[in-house]
Length: 238
Figure 1 (spheres, rainbow, N blue to C red):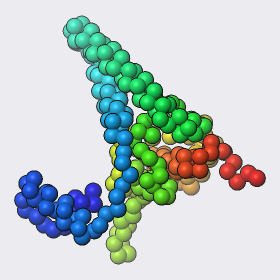
Figure 2 (figure 1 turned 45 degrees about the horizontal axis):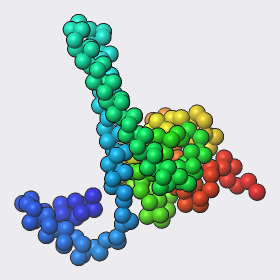
Figure 3 (figure 1 turned 180 degrees about the vertical axis):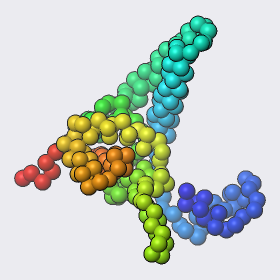
Figure 4 (figure 1 turned 90 degrees about the vertical axis):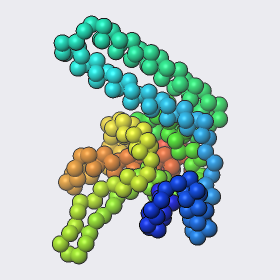
């Protein structure tokens, strides 16, 4: 994103492979960006394929529901059911592979995430694959920014003041992974539940409160992984 904005600021008119290479080199020379920790791209690709299959299954199920309530040929319905079954089997196989690899390489981190109420094995495996090495983030705020969950404000003068919203300048995949676990955490995690109740009581819209809880949950992930301690609902307890 930083490179993209940098290139746009130069008002370039042509886009070719040679021009892209030149601007990448220019950005690196001028800005001297810090090196990032290497990612396990193989496992990340596995996690992302699982997410893609989940989206496709949801799309086909919506079509099936519409077909079953409409005037559709029986062969169409059977075709949809067959494709859903095949994709669900593929998804289960990939999830088993992802869990196996995660347990093999990151069993301790997996156990730490599973200590958080509302987090299951599937979510924990997807999070570890998408986040990579947690030590590449120096603070919890940077993890939240990576997910695009930091709030942004828009003010100009004394008359223009728009309602704040999340930046979205981050990983949409990570936000997607966090959404359903966050809803579970609002029900079963005492810290997230109290935080959500507090925000709603102050007049915050429920959707905005959920986004804030997603950021809070991500900070809890960062905390248990960096401190190497299971979740404690009473962190200030002596």
